[in-house]
Length: 108
Image 1 (cartoon, one colour):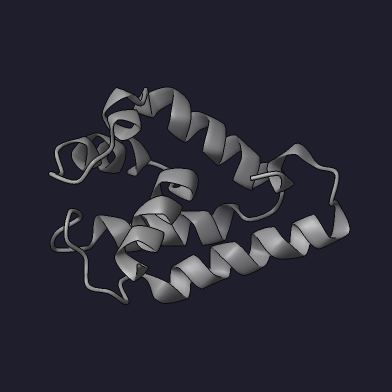
Image 2 (cartoon, helix red, strand yellow):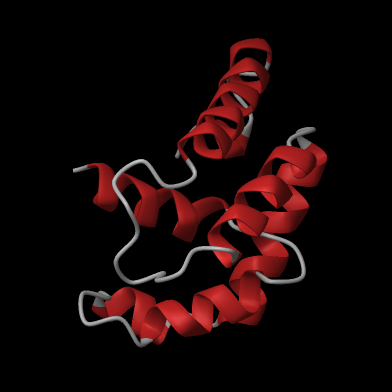
């Protein structure tokens, strides 16, 4: 479950300079989904970067991307990989959505 959460979070929030590389690398994982393999990584990363910058979570998102980029194996990360960074992104996003519940980025 934790591995799935890490990968799900990566796919929805990883941004910054390494996002495209991570997105493309993830396509090669044996357990990548059809949606992951079809994803336009450039468009996906640009969109997510813009959202997290707009809601004030860009630094947290970039920290998560950096953590993911430093994993030995993106396809088989340890269960607690990047847990702190994932938590920081989640908390930042939740704080924004508490203040702005009608914002489109809070419907995810």
